[in-house]
Length: 288
Ligand code: PAF
Image (cartoon, rainbow, N blue to C red; front, side, top):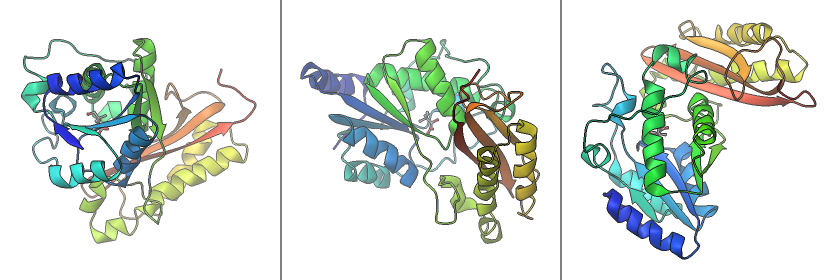
C-alpha cells in the first residue's frame, strides 16, 4: 500500500489505473479507525480493481466548540488496518493541501440536513458535503462507501450525488455492533464503565421500534413512544436529544409510515453522545 499526501500524486496514480480500464472504490475516513471503517475499506478494495481510502480530519465540519484539536490521530494503526484489507492507496493530505486558500465554495443541502443532527450541529453537514465533493473530485471513484451508523450523513450524500450528477455510486454499509448491540464508534471508549454497561439499551430500544413497525404499527408517534419507553431503562442516560421514525430518504416524519423507514436516536451518557439508527421496509406500500 502506498501512502500519498498530495492531490497531484494521487491523481497521477489513479489516472494510470483508469487508463487501464480499472475501477476505483473509495472509503473516506477521519482516521481513528475501528471495525466499522474496516468494512468500508474492505468493500472498496474487494468490489473494485483499486481500493483507495483517505484520512483527513476536516476542519470545515467541526464547529468552534467541537473536538477538532483533540480528535484522535493514530496514523500508523490506521494505515496498517487499511493495508490489511487490501487498500492500494491511503490518501493523507494536510489541511493546507485540501484548503490551500480560504474556502469560498460550499456544498449544502436543504431538508435532509435540517432536523436531528442538524439541530445541534447547524454547520456540520455543509462541511461534510463540501469535503466529500472535493474528495470525489480528487479520487474520481466509481463507488464510495459510507457507514449506515451516520445515517443522516449517508442520506445527505446519496441525495447530493443525485442532485449534482456526481458520477459515483454512494453505497451504505451496515453498522458494525459490539456483542451487546452497541454500534461501534470511537466514542464508546470514552464511556464510563457504568454507562457502558447500560449503552446496549440504545440499540435494544431501536430494535423494539422496528419490531413494532414490522408488527403493523404505521403511526410514527406510536413508534417513537415505544423507543422512548425502552430508553428509560438506561437510568444513566439523559433524555434523548431526539427519537424519531422517519422516511429513509428525506428523514422527514410522515403522517403514516410506508416504504423504506428508519428509526433514529441520539442519547447522552455523561458527556458521551451516542447516535444510532435501524431500518425496515414496509413491503407492498411504496413511499408516497
Ligand atoms: O464520516 C466521516 O468520517 C466523515 O464525515 C467523512 C465522510 C470522512 C467526511 O469528512
